[in-house]
Amino acid sequence: MGLFTELKDSISRVTDRLFSAEEPKRIGIYGPPNAGKTTLANRIARDWTGDVVGAESRIPHETRRARRKENVEIERDGKTVTIDIVDTPGVTTKVDYEEFTDEMDKEDAIRRSREATEGVAEAMHWLREDVDGVVYVLDSAEDPITQVNTMLIGIIESRDLPVLIFANKIDLEESSVKRIEDAFPQHRTVPLSAKEGDNMDEVYDSIAEYFG
Amino acid sequence: MPEATEADDLDPGDGVRIDLISSERMEGLATMEKIRMILDGVHEGNIVILEEGLTPDEESRLIEATMAEITPDEFNGIEIETYPKAGSRESSLIGRLMGGDGGANKLTVIGPANQIQTLHKDETLISALVSRQ
Image (cartoon, rainbow over all chains, first blue to last red; front, side, top):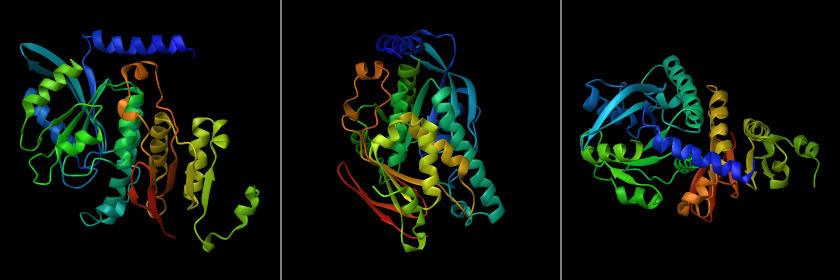
């Protein structure tokens, strides 16, 4: 592909995103397992639709299939922004069924790991094909500089997708939002606790600003 | 350079095999050929080191392909480590507008998840512990 064609395509993708206000934007909630993606998706859905997206659990890979909540209307400053929330399984490069055998029998653990691998593959495919923007959720009590995080942020950047980083779990004592800001200074980081509902006003302001 | 067949003749019980793949060898391969070569090596218990890393798109396809091949009690995925890409934090709007695929100028280490464990990683050093199965 020639330089000018590439430039034209890139500009066209950016302007399409900026000016096509009719369709709800599909916002993928991505991040490592147990960062609180489903808790956040449920918090947003509950606040604006009264409904939830999926079950939450402390066991990794509770979300094994991407789930979508459509037409979530978020009102900010008298303006309404409509998004489809896509809650995705936690991205990882390995899944070992033995991680789950403390919580369930071997057969269920194997089934869970199979579903998790299919879910991660699907989430990666959708990231390349089917989302208009990304909310990247990190556990602010954990080290953000992992291979999966840097790889995923790189993939998102390479696709020119608008991305907001949410530093979740600020209610935890070990939380450090600065560690996340320092790790990914090229992106805006919004601190929050999806579980406690802390700082959700800024969350909605930033969603409206980035994806509206 | 030793013939591939000589390496294949080695008994894996002797140790852990490390395949260092030059950028030249990767250059002519399509994305799925690269991924197949990496995963075939990892399935055999080898550590694969790429002189030139994968593009972001190739990385996402590698994760997807890895997930499709995970099987209980046999293969539980990969460990992958790369140096942070120089200048990624300064990625400019112009750079992104130019449709950049992110480039792939970083060394990448990939191994079976049950055999490789990263001990330390920073911008200039990846320290990994590799164990036999």
